[in-house]
Structure formats: C-alpha cells, structure tokens
Amino acid sequence: MKAAGFTFDRSAATFERHRALPHGVPEAIRTAVWKFARNRDQMRVLDVGAGTGRIGKAFVEANDFYVAVDASLAMLQEFRKHSEPALLIQADGARLPFGPQSFDVVLLMQVLSGTQDWRGLLDELRRILRHQGAVVIGHTSHPADGVDERLKRELGAILEGMGIESHEPKRARKRSLAWLESAATRNIHVTAASWTGERTPGEFLVRHRSGARFSGLPPAIQEQAMQKLTVWAEREFGPLDGSQTEEFSFELDMFEF
Image (tube, rainbow, N blue to C red; front, side, top):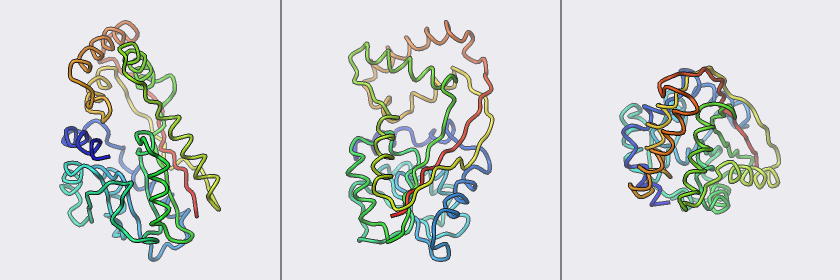
C-alpha cells in the first residue's frame, strides 16, 4: 500500500477538483452512519483511506471523535488545508497503529475497489473494532449507461489490448461485501444521498489521468491509451465538451460485529 500512497501523492493537489461531492452529501453520509451505529454519544470514528477529507470533513465539523488515516502524506496535507482540527495519521490501512478494540466505527469510502488484499485489510479493521462496532463501506454509484461507465469499459478494453492486466473493482467490492455479511451480526444497505449532475467525455479524460491505478502506469502506456480513448470518445459522443445529465447516488453498506 506504500506504492499506492506514492501514486496518490502525485494527484493530491487536483484530487478534489475532479471528485468533489455536492453540498450536503458528506453530511447525509454522516447522518446515515450515526443512524446505524449504536453508541452515538461517545463514538470513536476511524476513516481509512480518508484522502483529502471530502467525506471526513462532515465528521470534523460536527466535532466527532474522528481520526483520518491515509497512506499518502500529500492527500492528508490537502485535508489539513480545510480541516485544521482533524486528527490525521499517515499509515498503511493493513497495519494500523492502534490497539485492539480502539474504534466504534470504521469508514472505508471509495477504498475497497482499489485494494488488492481486501481480506487482509478487513481482518485488520476487525482487530481494532470494538464490540458492536460498525464497518461502513461507501461508494458513488454511476449509471451503467452513463458517460463515465462507458469510458471506463472502453479504457479497460484498450489497456487489455495493450497487455495491461485488467482491474475489476466491482468484483473486489462484491467479494468484500459478501465476506463482511457472512461475519456480521447485523447489516443494512442504504442510499445516503442522490443528486443530478452533468458529465462530459472531456472531463473524464482529464480526471482519469490522475486516477491512482492509471497514473501509476508507464507514461508511454498512458499516452497511447488516452489517444485511443479520445478517438473512440469523439466517435461515440461527438464533441468532448458535450454534456449529459445523469443521476448519481452515494451507497452505504454497513455491518455490525
């Protein structure tokens, strides 16, 4: 996970520019977590893979006992810029610097899909989780026929054609959720927030260059893949700045142990 931290270091300064959540969504996520969790009054929250704090800031602003962990120092430095009181720790999520049963809630927001050893990560989270504590998995849901999803599928096909091993985030997340459900005493799936947004192919092409996995590829591979994807996008969508209105949601899977 150190390599992943280094990769995110390179994209930290522009991360939220392309991935910011609409106003009110982080607060809605916090409300849903608190509704599920049992010990509201003295809750200790750990956010693993907290990044720049686009979700964690809602917990900080509410004066919760909140600790953010990320492997990338640069991402945490961006977090600090808008959340000075936050407790931020640079650490590997699979080797957390906390004793057993230290936290009531552990957040994994947009993390599982990029994790290679998801079982090792979840075992570590269970170690530091208190009795009747909760693990909360979250991700943004995009329409399957939307601009981003179509471009992601095509980019995956392009990279496979170039001999780059494909990454299937949905499969990794599905396996993780199945394992958590089998071990949990209580679990629930909720839509914390929904919103309408505009997407353009051009924005995807710019944003994806800073993605952790893609930006870790050799520069020559990145350029060749993006050239092919741009040609495909222009053929499929027309002008790259043409926008399409889409529906999005932030989905939470919450498990009590």
